[in-house]
Image (tube, rainbow, N blue to C red):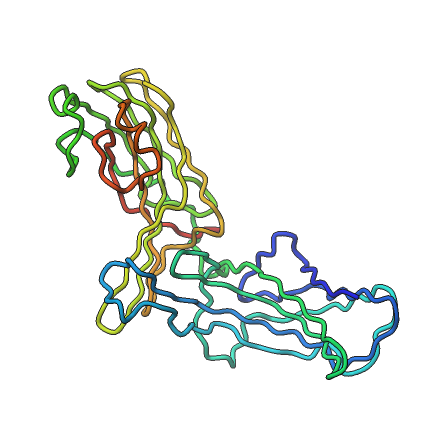
Length: 316
């Protein structure tokens, strides 16, 4: 005996103004009685503050009360019997209803301290002597088409320079004396359905280059009374060059965004979600071989980087 949920869309992506549709599939070897089949829809912003978050004293650590977005239960079938074999029960539920006065539908997001999640649960109640059947599935929420930018966003680029003078931490002695210069441009605003684009050129470097990477960071901030807990964490690293690249050669930047780990840049009252992109140049050094597992954000003698804000938007 088992129960399963099958949504109408294989990617499980829906918009708030749409109906969540699918089937409840029950498999049983013999007919069973039940006291009703119910479908519950829940959506919330879950916030937590972990040790080490900037700007927070120890007494604030822990889980904060979730912000409800969606909370509705409907009866799909009244009490009765389910025949043996495979039973499929279709359902359709409009996600946003005008009479509900909850938070706006934020897009699905899975972060370190902030999680925006939408769940659909089906329960088959069978009384005290029998185990009830239940299953839960996550569905993905994206912004309504009416709320999206009508036109594709123009390719906004920011020009950057990376030299020994732009670094706030000490570098290898050879770099300080011989110098290096990297210049280029990269997206400062990006559509979630698109990609981070740009280009860079290594003009000169006194030390051979080991690797050039593009790192994507999320910056999660939570309001706690008069304090703000902020944590920056690495989402992904994309290598765009391996080894000592040719000088004055234009290297393209092309980075695809991860779906569940990104969302539109959000500034809500109790929380905010922002993003940053970093261009990281690592140089060949014996020291790097001794510290392979260190945090990429920790200043190192053999690393030079430039970090820039990145606005993410949803477009049609």
